[in-house]
Image (cartoon, rainbow, N blue to C red; front, side, top):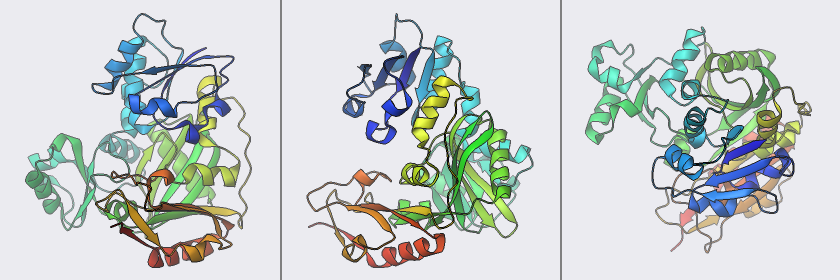
Length: 398
């Protein structure tokens, strides 16, 4: 089989060799110049670089000009899902099309599809529609402004009213077609991660955030702890996935635990960031990127071994942001007392000589400090993270 991988996420995370048999298949890795060094080494494969300066689908097609079409186009990063769909359509390759991908890339299309299946979402509108008829916005109170296809809460802002959110669009000169507004719904936020095969759950883990992704974008630490996966919650999640037609592969879904029940926030057809992949594997035995590759290449009937997490065998992750420091060098103070804590499985931190990324990132290699907790109970890990977040300090290095 000829397999084209649109490469973006480092092999140290994906572990391509665990999910792809490079001796059986003809595998081509194609990525921007700054990603070539993170392609897998020591495997039989072709490694191609595209310029990384123009439309990505055009660059991919130009790199493959004159060659037989691949049998499978693999995209493991959310940023590559639409590119992969356009490449498939141009080359006549089976797999998700642009129309298939939009419901889990465009937040308005996404929530419209979920709401059409009778599942609760915040009230929402595309900004263009809201600006054209502000009197038709069906709520007036706290409002969240979001990019339609954004990730990691980048570009997300909260406002006291819907009118204030729309004014923020006008005053900042934002492109209305690229944003949505949605009603703020009160309640803790959970993320549900898993793998499905032909619509059926292979493995599902429910986690509750300690902190919020929006506060992380503003400079606050963030974590999450795994909690019991209520069968009713798993059923609700599977209904959300069916609404946006995520049938085979990994998913990362976020929801609000409101006073009236679960409220859908968003979902991606990809594995979660930060420590999600590692903690999911610790709990279930399933490494999501490996499962995704096997399901893509071998089909949804391929067996994925899994195990049931124990109540006292939950795991969590935590991370401190570096993108708001105003410098690439920082000092991390106060982690020493936690390094040997029985619930801290791993803790890494940057020294003053190691740079942190200046753009938002959850990756342990790019932030001031990050780690994994467990095995343990959910409440104990959440309390530990709250204590760490209050006492550990990250400051710019002089």
